[in-house]
Length: 349
View 1 (cartoon, rainbow, N blue to C red):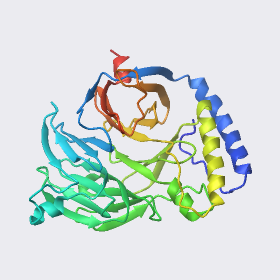
View 2 (view 1 turned 135 degrees about the vertical axis):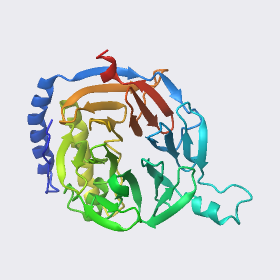
View 3 (view 1 turned 30 degrees about the vertical axis):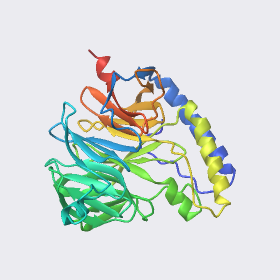
View 4 (view 1 turned 90 degrees about the vertical axis):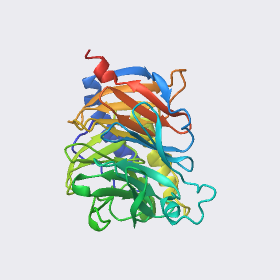
């Protein structure tokens, strides 16, 4: 594993695949020497069984409430620690509310991601409306501000919110509590010489920890990568997965990049890194590559790799990860949300 460095490839030629293979092979020896744990991991149970198709995100508020987003339906659902639904912000307008201005403001065109701050205010990336919407803890709309193609949001200290988008020049845009842009940071990795294709490959998902760090998970890079930033946008370490079993996927993605560079069609790739979870208490990172769940410590060292399954033994293709003190909540579209015991905690008891 290569930590604190960036794998940069500038050529679109076939030599890029060879050079990347050599770099990965060298890194693999180091990773294999560490011998991280490898095991199967089965969920204890499914939770919130009405949530499944369209699942986008699950977050937790300071009071233990769960905030679950599924698009296009049912929208944003908030439940208490026992699973009782407290409120719902729907994407479809309910009958008889056409003349209600506040109801119209609260509609979600298509929600991509959400987060919640210490006061219970909800921030939602509405890609369908090119807005970030802000709701009170009671679900009442507070404000919104325009952001083109927002795909991920993360609450930061002092009322700031970070947003990741599809096509803006930088990876992250930060807005203050009034929705005013205050800074941008994060240069896309130069994977392709074709600008639109390169930006697509740099689409990512955001996470945070209690120390104010921001984590950017690159969804489509050939080598699964999570980059840590401080609040001002200064880059910290890169956490990459470059074990020997990741090499075939990396090479295949680079070959597909070469193919699409010769076309004029819109870029289209399958995600490599499908979900990100951050232990907010200590900055440990959990990343999912479909049904492979990887655990890294705060220094970026891979501690374990798990194959994740439902209680019935079906593969669980992770879309979203919530890291709790003793549990993981992992969501899949369309299979829904599942509760796991944290294997790192269980092994120390």
